[in-house]
Length: 140
Ligand SMILES: [Cu+2]
Image (tube, rainbow, N blue to C red; front, top):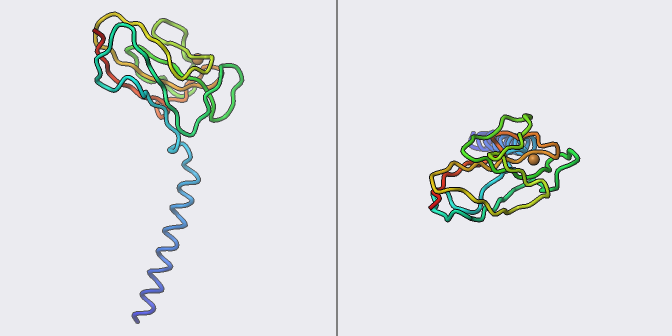
């Protein structure tokens, strides 16, 4: 009796493990992320400040060709993430780093701002909310 329960448990554990492995393989998107490394969320910065972007599981490349898991950074001023597949406009509030830059000098007038890093493909089509991060900074 004891043995059969142990065997059953072992089989169950093996099945659970197999499921979790499959789960990892199919949800590759969760291993990818985009973040603002600098400034920190809630930071107070000067009117000229440096923004540094970070990526995980993605390639940063100049704008041009559409390549899977590759793209460039955008900084959106006082805007939320852009829905997946939508083109990111070229305005003062949508800064494109189409040369593949991972950091930039940003100038803003004093005030409180929402800054959103949005990753997009070579044709400036957004990868959506999963590959974005929004922080708030105070410019003094
Ligand atoms: Cu762009």
